[in-house]
Image 1 (cartoon, rainbow, N blue to C red):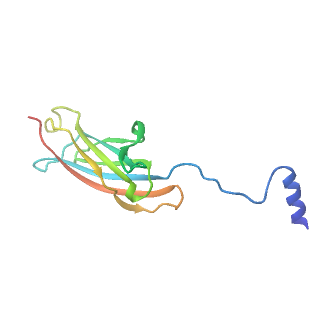
Image 2: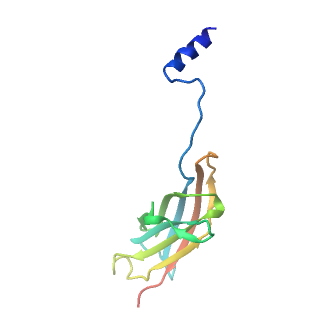
Length: 153
């Protein structure tokens, strides 16, 4: 009786004891890529700019990059030629997300000479590191990329 009275009073003020969860948004995932960049002899190269660009499959099955470079991650390799990238991107499951990874020498002759730019296109969905919550968080995916760059002539 007391509970009914409280519910009635709350209802007068627009408060309900029942609620519905309404979710609005797009499934997202985190993509982490460990990168190692060396020259053709296997020596690490410091100062290489590395950009990770998420891609997604549209309704027609075509691979597209995120509009406006959404959440691309950019970093530079350290003295050991390594870098870590982390990007949040749209995700509709492991089969629907790929990455482009770009490598550019932006420091000229420093750090061992000038190197040609390179890229990895359509890097297929990385391994699952952490599962998502089953709602809008599709988890964390990871990949390791090793790139050998040629010196410019």
